[in-house]
Structures are given as C-alpha cells and as structure tokens.
Image (cartoon, one colour):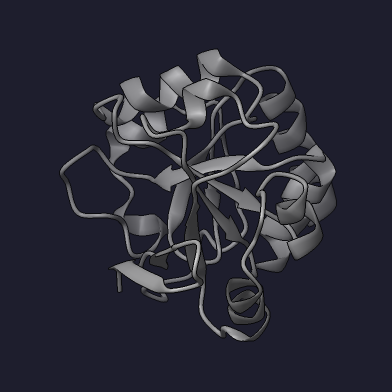
Length: 189
C-alpha cells in the first residue's frame, strides 16, 4: 500500500468513527475525527486517561487554524510562522470545536503540524484530527514506534506504516498559552 492509499484508508476509518495510531511531527499519536465523540471516548478508555485531561488537535496550516481559533494575537501568529519546532498553543477562544474536546474553561490546544504525512492526512480528512501520545496514561511516551505498548497496538482500528521502521527518538511539542496582551506562558518546554 503506498502513502496515498494508506492515508485514504486511515481517513475512511476516521470517518467511520475509528481510532488510528499515526506518526505526528513529534511522537506517535492516537487520533480520531473531531466530530466522532465515540472515537474520542475510545481514546480516553484505551489510554486509561482521566476525562478532565483534554486531547490536542492537529491542523494542517495557519489557514485551517484560523477557521477554529478566534483572535490569534499578532505576536503569536508571527511566532507560529517562524518557530522551527512543533508548537502546541492553548487557545481560550475557539469556534467549531465540539464541547467534548474542550477543557473545563473552554480552551483547546492546537498545533499546526509540520510532518508531510500528517499534513496530507489532515487535509484528506478536511478538518483537524485529535492527537495524544500513544501510551497508557502515566506511562512514558513512546519516542519511536517500537516503544508503543502492545495494549495500544491491539486496541486501535488502524496503524499507519509511515515512519514505523524509524528509530529516531522524538519528544512532545513545546506547549504555550498566549494571554490577551500577547505574553506567552510556556506550559511545557
């Protein structure tokens, strides 16, 4: 199966409410279509994750981000355009994001993905994809595919093959929140 066929298969599974294991621009992640609450709940169950810990969303571009995030501060937009590393931003004001994906205060973490495979996956789906590390809650995150636990592998509906053989160690993104004045609060470095 080539790259495009695999992405089309993954998108079909996402649209049917499935959960996929896929490589992001950071670590291997569990993903679902943002419009399938049952799939989101399956991710929480699979990870044994507390429901108050929100998932993040991945978008393919700044244009897609602007369809969901309200009032992106110019300083933050500039940072997103020049930052060389994956950067997840907590947005306090969003639109078009179901309530079951928002934190208690209504915020959502969103990252513009930089990996070409992941970008093509998101664009083929036509909307953001959920993302969370492919590990059981409280366990170390997998730095590469070979570290993904068998419990996870056995419970997902589809496993992407792209980057599966790579042993390059990766880590989660930097995470920031931007206040109304454009000041950045680094939550995870």
